Length: 489
Image (tube, helix red, strand yellow):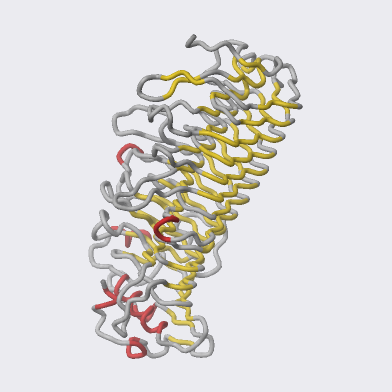
């Protein structure tokens, strides 16, 4: 860790002429120790160099900034390309790392932007460019939490990552009111590789261990495992609020998981995002339904920690499309624990390979004005089927209000008997909305809402839907809602 081995302390770390004391800005360039054959520039060939490592210099610039007395300290990265072989660790309060103003249209290698390229010495542990976490400071103290670290205006190129222990390009731990903003992150390996050969445990941006704040105006493209991962366990680390806003997550396509937005945290809101073209590429060459989703809200049971249960999650004005799994998934593999207090408003899910919306587990779930069309199978599928014990609670208190579900079953259709909404669960209410067949040349979605019994548990116990209400649903060119004969009787 260069922060502990840079040979300086506080203001003694500051290079002459690098600091604007009037506003607390440190220019990082005087701290870089580039060999003469690699002058600082935007030349992407530096990624393949063996003698360039900008990490020690950046660490020293951060120590200099931390010694300043201004309310906010800033380390400024001029346009160019920075080789980061071990992550930048901004472990001081009220600290900003920023490059020049970044446009969402910036192409890879744009010489007018600051690009942080991760060429990790140890991709299994530290594959990325920034690791925010509590650490030993110059005064030999370790804070319990870091406050208001802002990471802004960077392109990020990830070249490698872990296959065993998960980590991220930007990983935020124990950070209060932190901000990741105006970031374009791409997976750009030094040697071209197939998606199935990508590092299986590399996420894009992760907030974990009780971190809160905002992720705004971010593009994550081509990262293998997850684009954004809200990973805090509320029972163990608390539930500070997190906002994910105006983000685009696309082409997440590695061999494990490959889901664009993963949430196990509590108290999060996602708004105005576009999530598309994500696909799982297992190493064995198979393509299944266990990944490639747009969003997955799920419980997780970490080793020696309480079960992480997503709670109070709000998704609004967001579009999930062309994913090779499902657009929206709520799930749990942990008996007795399900996502709770989940709200979807004005969400659209289209042209996903499997389901537009797939609720496998959840309680107190409301979906209002959700559109689902052109998906490979059901537009909305609520199923309590599970191999968990038959008594395990899976789905309850679900409201679908004003859904618009049309022209689904484009891949898995087999005639006009498929419903737009299929319910294999109890305590579900469907109010108003329209389940329609608009393209009469496509007859696969010929039914509107269908309830049906299901099997669960290791003994395949049969359950029948109870306490469901379907009211006011318009059935444009589809049949009336029905309770189908149980195929297991």
